[in-house]
Amino acid sequence: MLNINIKNLGNIKEADIELNKLTIFCGENNSGKTYLNYVLYELLDKRFTLNSSIFSDIIKSTKENGATTLNIEEFINDNFDKLKLSFEKHFEKSLDRFFSTEQGTFKDFKLKINQNIENTQLFCKDIKFHEELSIGKNNNTTCEVTKENDNTIVIVIKDINLPDDMYIDFISNVFFKYIFSDMFHDTFLLPAERTGLNLFYQELNLNRNALINHLQKSKINPMDVIKDLIVSKYPQPIADYIEFLNDTVNLKKNKSELRELNTVLHNKIIKGKYQVNNDGISFLPYKTYFKGNHHQAKIDLHMASSTVKTFFSLEFYLEHMATKGAYLIIDEPELNLHPDNQRKTARLIVQIVNAGVNVILSTHSDYIIRELNNLIMLNDDFSSKEKLVKKYNYTKSELLSKSDVSSYLLKGGLVEPMNITSNDGIIAKTFDDVINKLNSSSDDIYYQKMEDLEDG
Image (cartoon, rainbow, N blue to C red; front, side, top):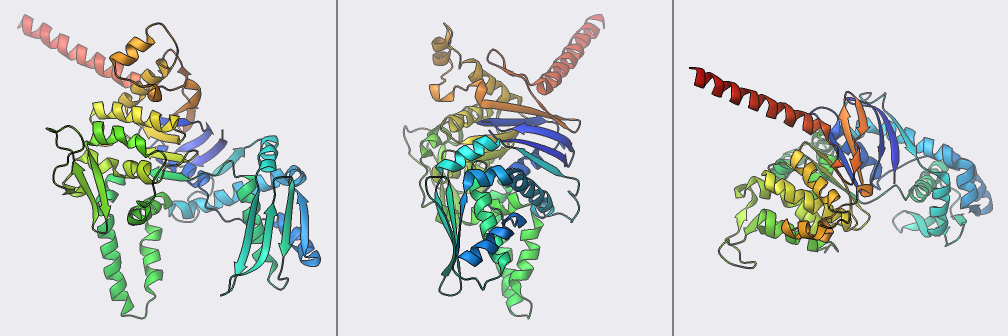
């Protein structure tokens, strides 16, 4: 499990986070949950470019001799702390760009990755890879980095005339990619803005295309303007989500190994299926008076219910993109949902976790937490378990081990772990306090009113 320490992230002064199969963030509005989701998204995702001076001498030696052989275990032992520090500093400096904000906004942000060197050495010993640097119109290979299934890495440079910095960039990224590969995963984030983006992404494209047409008639480079107006306008997770929506026609050609999980979503929550084509997203609702998958007439997404609008990206992800070992980050899974559908969503999330996808979610929903607690409590063996599972229509794939859950409360600038027990589930005092206050005020108002009416 990845363990990280974060300091000075928006309203968050400090956070120690240990990611689990299911990681939950709770807290009041403006406590930093979305910021935390965004940072984890950037940290877990595979995209990164680094340049470390550690590799300067290796490049020089390789140019002189044509090839260099390294023992990966010895290299990690000698350079692990330097590599980790280089990664942390690079990540800290990239945060302004990632959030698309003014330079210096996150100047006090600090990241520390708590990764065990022995585990890294063991992990790297078993992996093998071959990476090539190719340049020019003919894609001539100028550098190769190869590791077979042992401790040896071989670096070969075929063109000594190219600048060292080019090779340092390439070698740095190869080494970082594989030495820290147990940290990087395919990661998909469902932002809180997803409902609106699902509806209006095509309008954004129309506006962009119209602007390009106008700019092409001028001497201004249209792509430079588009980059300034669109890419820099959004934090990277939002820009990535818009890019995902624009690519759904191509992505739908893929079939996820976890698409069977959509059965619950289709039949019990949205009661229909989506259709994606060049014209956009449509919804095919099931006819309620027939059994089976009989559809009513197709409707455009903007005419569908708020629940249907919200669930498109999760359904599409499960149908076409989900892979075991990946990370799915959901900002406010309860958006636009009736309490009963919030409970069903909690059960679906656990099925996703048990199928092998790691889930990070931030939530304000007491209903989701309480349903997760039911699934944690039912995971233990006790005499009435099967009776209760059958009575409330739970399935084995919905039961949740407390050891697979980490839960945190964001409050007062800190991120504190919430206690989890197999008898109670997640101790979400933040919700309990509000509910108790509401019950107390309701009782006080009711009984005082009844007393006054009887006296009057």
